[in-house]
Image 1 (cartoon, one colour):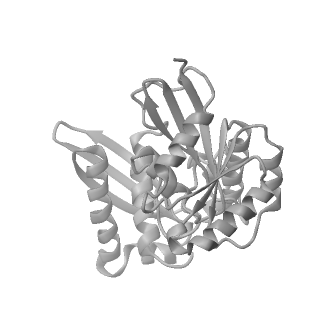
Image 2 (tube, rainbow, N blue to C red):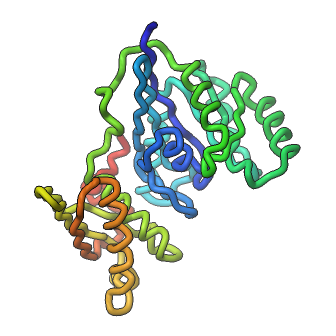
Image 3 (cartoon, rainbow, N blue to C red):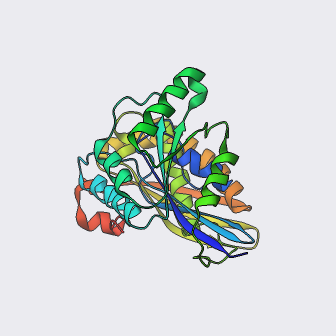
Amino acid sequence: MAHKSGYVNILGKPNVGKSTLMNALVGEKLSIVTYKAQTTRHRILGIVNGDDFQIVYSDTPGILIPSYKLQETMMKQVDLAFSDADIFLYVIEIGEAEIDEAIVAKLNKTRKPVIICLNKIDLSEQDQVQKKIDYWQERVIAATIIPVSALHKFNIERLFDVILANLPESEPYFPKDELTDKPMRFFISEIVREKILLHYKKEVPYSVEVIVESYVEEENIIKISVIIYVMRESQKGIIIGDKGLALKRVGIEARKDIEEFAGKKVFLELLVKVQKDWRDDDKQLKRFGYSGQ
């Protein structure tokens, strides 16, 4: 039997459940998941291997109109996902009202297979689901429409079967023992950023960048130093909190998740620094790894 491989690029608006869906398909928590929009900033690959196939899932930032340079680099990653997909996986929420006509036009133009995932169906009635399936089948005629609940892993096996059936014949793109294209440092910074998204309100989490300053793996422990960058001095005070308690909570929760991810005991140090208006600074964005590639 010939070997099949391909990129399955996951697209959709912010907060429709793209990261939750990829994590369900991969079986590992690779993308951070919170109830807040714009959680994903980077394009993250999750690799699933079988004896005769390799599926490279690509989680992308939510499609939006950029309002600062960081978001512009995020949308460049979405554009890249349109150019190198073997299969498009377009995720929509069951309750989504506004349709992105530009995306619909791109999906109709492509000659690649399109799967539309109707997500969060656990929040609706069966007749509403059927109406949405019919609606999208009319809008993107060649698409396969699959209702799922990524959170509850409902219909994920059927989705996987459809992906596998549409995968092109190819040799694997990555070694068969690889799970992702990102290094451990990336996932550490994402775990810390997830805790910040969960525990802080308003603009603060969106003004934060997390960088792993040092990572030293010893026989029985991993020693990690992380810098949390904010845009203003007032945000630094909010992140640290009264008597440092807010930052301590982030550290405790992040350390537990990092230990689970790394399978080893972790010592985690968190520092907070101000990097003024870094989201609109080309030099800082490049330093933080936002090149748009």
